[in-house]
Structures are given as structure tokens and as C-alpha cells.
Amino acid sequence: MKPLSPSNEHHYAKARMLTNKASSRRPVIIDTDTDIDDLWAVAYSINVPTIDVVAITAVGDGFSDPFYTAPNMLTLLGLLGCKDGVAVAYGRSSSILGPIDTYLTSPKCLNQTADIYLQPSPFDAVELIVQILKHSHGKVDILALGPLTNIAEAISTDRTIVKKIGTLYFSGGDFQALSQFTLLPPAQQPSFPYHTKNKGSSWNVFLDVLAMQRVASSGIKLAAMPSPTQLLLPTNLTMLEILVKKFNIKLTPFLHGLITNAAKCTNQDEGEIKWWDNSAAQLMVQMQTKNNKKGFCKKFETVSTLFFLIPESDQLFGHGVVNLTKAVKGQAPFTICTQVDETIFLKEFLTKLISKKHYSCATTYKNRYDIALQRQLSG
Image 1 (tube, rainbow, N blue to C red):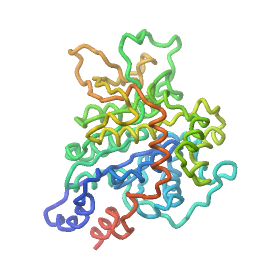
Image 2: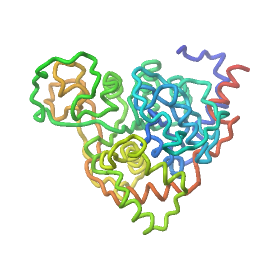
Image 3: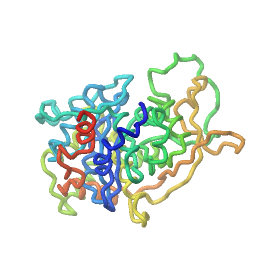
Image 4: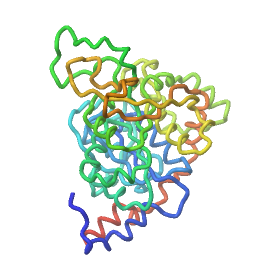
């Protein structure tokens, strides 16, 4: 992407003002592969009064077919009453996993009607990330809920945006000590790149480990809700129903289906489903708060990790290895959550889900950052 020339700088003045208004709310870009747990995270995030979701960028190398990523997110926002309030942009893609493409609309799942008039941003995901960060008055946090393909390409496109990123909050990652690995290659060397995830690694790392390495070594401040900790937050529907009654939470039929039908619609046992990406969203909100000890995460650790890019040992590819010697260069510091309180987590999630405040959806379509910028560029 070419840098702005001084003659074009005035075209961005108004759009720049739209990214960071005089507000105590923290601007956030959500980068997502639009899986079911991503839908939960977005439904939660738009109702958090302390953040402003300025854009949702979709990446197509996760658990949704690239073509379905943006439409599914637009459909969700429309069903939640957030129509046209947040920019949704298509992003980069490589592999296609696609098991949940019709979760919202299939008669066998939520059976919702998609609004065909809801349109994605005129900018692609990488371009929109770059423009928002480049022209923001202050720092913008990023909530990464899928492979880091878009983020890696954005910072490769314009390295100056790194200093505009406050913290990148990542969903996933498996941070283990080197002593946990035997460091032996598999008995039969698999083809590379692998077609199936190696044991224990995080999907969001494994699907684009090079992007993870680039982002981790970029100098961005990093925090993660690691996969082992996410396993401590199962979608326990029995507990959920107990809390719904205890706190008198009135879920609409759509919201109830959105958060309870994942196992049925993906042909999995309930025990296999965790809250995953929504836990990363709540971790972000908790860490953004000055007194962050009141949230669901009860223990934080700081680790320095290195992501291996070689396929010779199946155990290491896609893992973040910690406790390496100081002589090893390129390690990235992460703040990770290692202990959680499930009751606090669910109460926070459910109470935000039903609030209908939609703090991030107040912007009108014509004044949305991407639309205003597009109008100014074409005028």
C-alpha cells in the first residue's frame, strides 16, 4: 500500500476523527474466522460499555469458508439489532474448513433469515486494519479470534501501524516448556504442510504458524487466553440454565439457540464444546480495566515463548515453547491467563448478552469510518 501523499492528507481528516472520538471507551478491532464461538464473542463485545468495536475483519483460513465469513457476521449483527453499525470486511484466506457456514440459517440449526441487503465494507480486511490504525489518534486494541493471517499481512504492509496497536489479545496458543517434548520426529514423516493439526497445538496458531511468528516478533504487546485454560470453561448447559434462573436472565429464543446449539449443529458431544473465543473477549475487557482482579481470570502469568516453524518434529510445529535459555533469540513475551472462575465468566457473558445496549452500534452507516473514508477517496 502506498503511503499518503501530503496533497491527499486532507481527504483523511474527517475519517480520522471518526476513529477515536473524545471518549473513555477503548477502540477495538475484532479479527475473526467467524466460527460459532466467534459469534458469541461478538454478541458479547458489542454490549460492553467500555469498548468501541470499530471494525470486524474476517479471515478465511479458519473454521468458516472464506465466502461465508463476512455474510455470517453481517447476519449475526443484523439479528442482534446492530444493522450497519459496524464495518465488516472480507479478509485473506487459504485453507477451507467450513463446518459452520450455515449455522445461523440452516433449518437444522438456528433457521434464521439472512438480510441480503447487508453489505460488507468496501475495503478488504487488511486494508481496513491498516487505515484504522494509521489514522487513529490513539492506540487501538485488537481481539484476534482466528489465525493471525490478516494481522501479519497488515503489519507487513505498513510497519508504522505497530506503534498504534495497544494490545493484541489472542484466543488460543499452547505455551509449554521444552521439557514437555521428546524432540523426536514422528516415526513416519508426514507431508508438510500438515493436513491435520498436530497433537496439543492451538488451531489458531497451527493454521498459520508463520503469521503467529511474524506478529509475535513484531513488538506488539501480547496477551492470550491459552487453549489449556479455555478447556477449563466447558459449555456446561446445566450450569448455564441454573445461572439463567438464579440471576433472572431473560434470553430470547434466538440468543438461547445461539449459545446452546453448537454441539447439535456440529454433531459433537456437549463435552467437546468450550467457550473458547468468548473467553478471550472477556479476558480483553478484564485486562483493560485498572482493577482487573475482579474478573473471571484469577491468575495471570508472563511467559516468553518461541514458535517453531520447522516440521521435523510434529510435537513442536504450532506450539509456543517457553522456559528457553536466554541465548535463544526471538522470544516473544505473552501475558496469559492460567486460572478461571466459571461462575463469574458465565454471569458476565449472560448479563452482557441480554443488555441490548449495543454500545458499538450507534454509528450511522454514512458516518462509519470505512464509508466516510471511501466517500472522501472517491470524491
